[in-house]
Length: 75
Image (cartoon, rainbow, N blue to C red; front, side, top):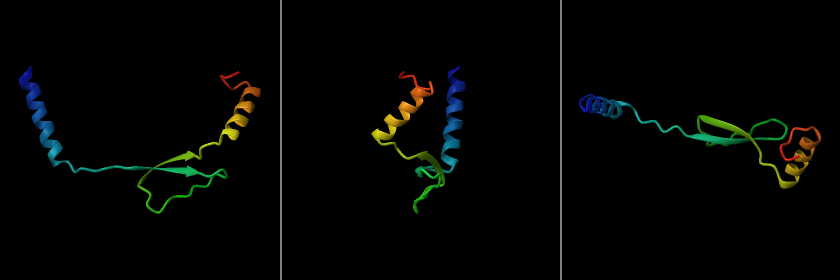
């Protein structure tokens, strides 16, 4: 059994040495309130678009609306 594991490890090590090393970086980009996205100049190929963080006042207002509509677990 250990012979098969060692052979597999050897094959994996050879493939790992021959495979090109690619660092894939992801940029987090904020979406504006109007839905537009401002991409930075040094943006990577991979992008995750997220809404801008809420202020505490916006969070409280949204939570109050959610409670009124019965969608909040805080009620």
